[in-house]
Length: 386
Ligand SMILES: Cc1ncc(COP(=O)(O)O)c(C=O)c1O
Image (cartoon, rainbow, N blue to C red):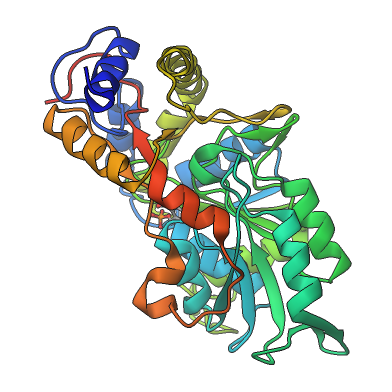
């Protein structure tokens, strides 16, 4: 059997020999979803005000330990808002990783800034604190205007590491390096609900962290996101700016800033509350699946990506590493043809036309991983998906 065909078999075996199409990650609605959505319709509170939004935020505070959570329309708007709250201004530079979903860099551009791409660690696929330190010490100067990137003259206004596929990045080290340079950290934890370093939840180490509840995530609100912070002033501003910066009053329409309509609708929050009730169950299923994958792929001599010691991954998307681009492409072809959905990792962001002139380091690990990694079915599947 070719390696590509053996991957098809290994994936099906890990799902107890299930036949039919296996998606990468499909949502599962088997709890109170219908009841809560129906209750929202009956209440007529379907838009941005309603009890489920408050409940959803409270549940997220409980799960993550973040002191404040502000639900948003999606993960991209959560990141956009977090960047503005951290003080990112037009023409600033924001350091991030090239190995990420495009929304990470898009939100930096939405805030008027330019991304600078720094390499990742080979074991977490998160921003490398060593590469970050080298970039800040080699390419930037501390000035009266803060840390400034020498070649572009831009202020380094924030750093956005990402917890790739739910694998926790070396976030404590990243925050340590940024603190020394006076740079706020915003964690893109879109993929990391349920992931922890020690007992602390991803997205709660930096000044701000963000989540996504898109349909492909561990739990979904249809579309949705959230901002996390422990700073009460930032939280207050986040709530104000995401709800059109309206000055509270029973009937007057007065706004004291250019605000945004980024508030999560109650209808979506209702779905989210029901989904969060199932989170522990989903995480347990995904962990057991990852353990079966790890045993089987290790026996087959194919590296399966696991959490680093001392961290807990939610195993949002499981990943294997193939020998090279040629083998990767063959495996993508054979697995998808056989109804086992796989996909390559994102094209590195610095190769996309809109970010091709952004500053960057050598990105050696990024390019290595980008050519070899594929994601394999990782969701909860109790019966074949039509
Ligand atoms: C790393 C990362 N950042 C940001 C986002 C944006 O989230 P959304 O799709 O909810 O806007 C996503 C996923 O969708 C993501 O994977």
